[in-house]
Length: 331
Length: 269
Image (tube, rainbow over all chains, first blue to last red; front, side, top):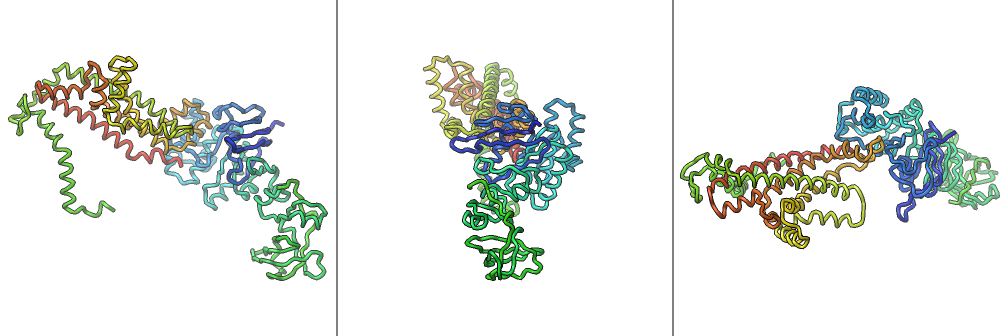
């Protein structure tokens, strides 16, 4: 099957800076795809290359099988929701949404009808006559969304779509974006630096670092089986175990990750592996323990009931060897 | 805050004196347009009459000077609008080597004394063997008109979010459509204001014109000559009144248009 977006060895260099360095990505039609990474990792450049605002220095891009290099943004069937929304301040909401239809010479009544439909999809019916300046941040984002989907693009790009919203709004918007994507069936590609957002919303996630794609996979794969220290560290909450530690358990010298939930605490008597509790915080149904084991610092999340380990207690530390995930990459 | 505290009376007196110092001479000019004394300015005017308006209306030399001035101002303003906008777009929307220098060089003609600009242009014209004509005046005026348009446009461009242009392209507009549907509506009032200021500046310019005109007489040059060789002196005052009105109205309008510009250009964020 043809990929919705296919990047083959795509690089984008700005002088000596390699914003994107030989990136390979295959994004399937109808997929909700996240590009995750810290700022400066190249994820936004990647989005801009797909949108056509940046031309790749090297490599090949296809959008639904068609070569995209040299095709200007206005001839790509790809629309963008900008981070600052980029609503046209001189037009009212309805005309903002109808802008692309106006360019395609759709007659006024028809384009206003379609724009109203798009506004209804983002739950902003009746706001058509307002100016962007009169709307709240969340409402502006919805207008930007409506403007980008009114044309039914094949791919929708979202640049940090929830970045400027407050926590509560962000959570409800996550749900809405998901259901919007399901009902439209459009490929969504969104850029975020928030790993929680990427893991909870996306079908697949690409983790970027220094212009390179470190790992592509489902949220479960990224979370449970990070392929590198960077991914494990950035996606967060996993224990990172140094090669010396791993070697004592598996006999293989490699960095490994271990999820905190996989660790069990036993009485120290007769335990194969012992550790000292360095921190304890009560989280409600669970307790988060800091452990010092064989020269490595770990943290474990264990059920709160029946757990009485205190700071400086010696405890037995138990986990299944297969819970230890060895990483292919060095960094 | 400041509207609630009342200014003390010495300050009020000083402001009144300052305003009077600026405006009373203008009023005297206006009054002399109605005097019955033809050869010299006598205060108080021996009598009042409206006949100089009719006389001014009938003077063909006045009409040709006025026509020339309007033409020069219109064409200089047009040139300034095109060049000033392009330059402002380049300086504010892109990064290139020497950008700051160009920005400074564009503004320079308005900082330079007119007499320097005039002499420079005059010697440049004679070196290049260009005969003085209507077009040399236009060229001279365009040098400072560009600055006014540029300054207005660049300020507005800086407040207009760059992603608006990308958004427009993204939604299917090519460069020309983006200019027509997004850029122009956003900088339109700034251009109108800049254009009006440029027109007003050109309309009453004397120094650069003196150096760049051949036989042509723009309205300010005509007035200058009238003052030196008086013939129906109050006609000059009639013209002065008209010039004040013609240049003040666009200035006021320009001020009004740019006053609440923030609301037009800054709300995209």
